[in-house]
Amino acid sequence: MSVPTSPQRRTRTALAAWLERHALTALALVTAGILAVMLYLPVAIVFVEAVVDRGSVTLASFAAVLSDPFYVGDLAGVLADPLAIPEHLAGFRDWLAAVSVSATVRRVPGIGLPVPWLAVDTPGVRFGLFGFTAYQAALSTVASLALGLPAAYVLARYDFRGRRTIRSLTILPFVLPGILVAIGFYATFGRTGTINSLLGLVGLGPYPFIEWNPLAIVIVAHAFYNAPLVARVTVAAWESVDVRRVETARSLGASRRRAFVDVVFPQLRPAILAGALLTFVFTFMTFPIVLALGGLELATVEVWIYDRVRQLALSEAATLAILETIVSLSLTYAYLRYESAQTGLSTGSAAPPRDPLFPDARSVLSPRRLAIVGYGLLALVVFVGPLASLVLGSFTDGSGFTLRHYEFLLERQIEGESFQTLPFRAIVNSLLFGLATLAVAVPMGVVVSVVTTRAGRGGTLVDTLAMLPLAVSGVVFGIGLLQGLVFGIPLPGGWRLQITGSVAIVAAHAVAAYPFVTRTVSPPLASLDPAVVESARALGASRYRALRDVELPLVASGIVAGAAFAFAISIGEFSSTVILATGGDAYTMPVAVERYLGRRSGPALAMGVVLLAVTAASFVVVDRVGGRFER
Image 1 (tube, rainbow, N blue to C red):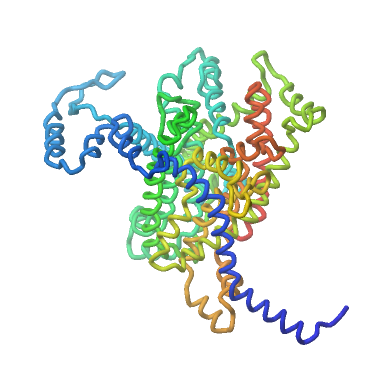
Image 2 (cartoon, rainbow, N blue to C red; image 1 turned 90 degrees about the horizontal axis):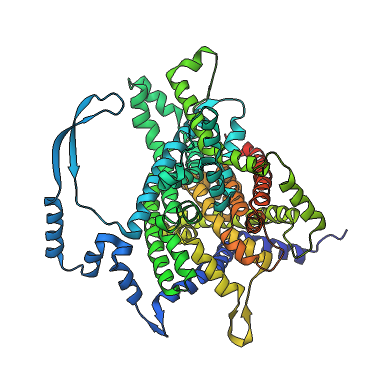
C-alpha cells in the first residue's frame, strides 16, 4: 500500500474542501436540471398548445373558455365583461330580491312530530365545470378530514397492539391505481357487492347505492385515498405537541377543553391545513375515480381534459389545464405563506405520553372508547371493505371459490413470452424503481427544503414553483412526456434529446415524489434553533458539514416520513409509467394490473392483491427501519 505524497494529500484536501463548500450548490443545480428536463419542459410543451395558433400567440382560447357558462357557470357574464360593474351589481341585487324565506311546519320522519321550520327558496345557481369540480373537492376534503382526524387522534394518543403496523399501513391507499379502487368500490357497494350480500343474509336489499347517489360514492372513494394522508400528516404533528405547555395551561386553571383549544389545536392547525390543502388539490384534479364511478355526468376539469384529448381538441385541453394549474398553484402559494407564518409553533421537546386504548374491560363502555369503537367500525366499511372485496373477488368467479386467477399469473410467469407482461418482472421493476426513486427524490426534496428555507422573502415563491408536480394535471404531464422526451426533441448540431425506459421512469417518479419529502422536511428544518448551527460553524464546521452533521439528524423523522411517501408514490404511480413503459419491459405492478384488466377482471384483481401484499410488506419494513428516527 503506497503512502500518498504531500502533493497528492494537498490535492485531496483541497478537493474535499471544495466539495464541502460547493456540494450544496452542485446538488441544487442537479435538482434544477432534473426538474427542467422532466417537469418544466413537458409541461411547457403542452401549454404552448394553448397560446400558439398557426405560429401566432393568442389568448382566444382563454376568452372562449372563461365566457362559456358550461365551464364557469353564472360567472361567464362577469368574466366576459368584467368592467360592466353596475350591470353585474344589478343582477346580483335581482338575485337577492328573488330569495324568499318563509316560516312553515315540518314533521320529523318516522314519528310525525311537527317542528317549526324556515324554508329558504333561492333562484338556481349554475356552477359550471370549474364550480362543480371545486364543490366536489370541498365535500371530499370535509369527508377526508372527518375520517382522517379521528385516526390521527387514536394513533397519537393511545397505545395498543398493532399500532405501529396500522400506522405503517395508512399509506397503503397511495399505491392503489385508481381503476383498481373503483373496482373495489363496485365490489363493495354494487348491487351484487359485499354489502348487499351481507344485507341479503337478513332479508334486506339489494340496494343500488352507486346509482342512488354516485357523487356520494365518489366522495367516499376520495376519502379512502386522502383520509390516510390527513391522518399520517396530523399524527406526526400530534406526537410533537409540547406537553409542558398543556401542563402549564392546566396548572393555571384551564379546563381540558380550554387547554386543547388554546394550546394543542394551534400546534396541530398547520398539519391539518396541510392535509386539507393537499386533499383539495388532489381531488380538484381527480381523474380515474370520477371517470369510473361517475362518468362524464359527474365530469371534473381533469376528466374533461382527458375527454378533450381523446377528441383531439388539444388547444382546449391545454387551456383547461393551464386554468386548473393556476387554481392549484394559487392554493399552494396561499398555504405556503400561512405555513411560513406558523413556523415554530410546535417545538416537540416533550411529547405527550400515550394511554392504553383499553386498560380494562370496564373502560370499553366509557363514551370516549365507545366512540372509538364506532369509528373503527366505520373505518372497516370505508377502508377495509374495498380491499377485502378485491381479495374476495380474486378468489371467486361467480360460481364460487377458485384459484384459477392466481394460476393464470403463475402460468404467465412460467410459460409467458418475453413480450408479454410477466408478474415477477413487474414486482421486481416496482421495487427497483421504488428504491431508485428514494435515492433521487429524497436528496431532491431535502435540497429544495434547504434552498426554500434559506431563500428569505422569496422562499415562498420558490417553494410554490417547486410544488408544481402537485398542481399539474397528470394527463397533461403524461402527454408532455410523450410529445417531448419519448418522441425526442431535436437540438442544435444534429443532436436529439430523448429519454425513455427505466431512467425516464425513475426520473418521472422522483419528480412526482420529491414534493412530499419537501413538505415533511421543511417545517422542522425551519423550526431549528439557529444558535445550534451557529455553534457548529463557530467550531469550524463548513456550511455543508453543519447541514450534514447537525441539521439533517435533527429533522431525520421528517426525512423518514417523506421517504415513505416517496416510495409509495413510486409504487403506485401509473399515468406517466404507462406511457414511458410502452413497448418495453419496464412495466410496473400498476401497469400490469391495467394490462390484465383489458382481458378479464379476475387476473387483474389477483395482480392487485399481489400489489397490495408486496407493498404492504415493504411499507412495514420501511417504517420499522426508519422508526428508530421517530419518537
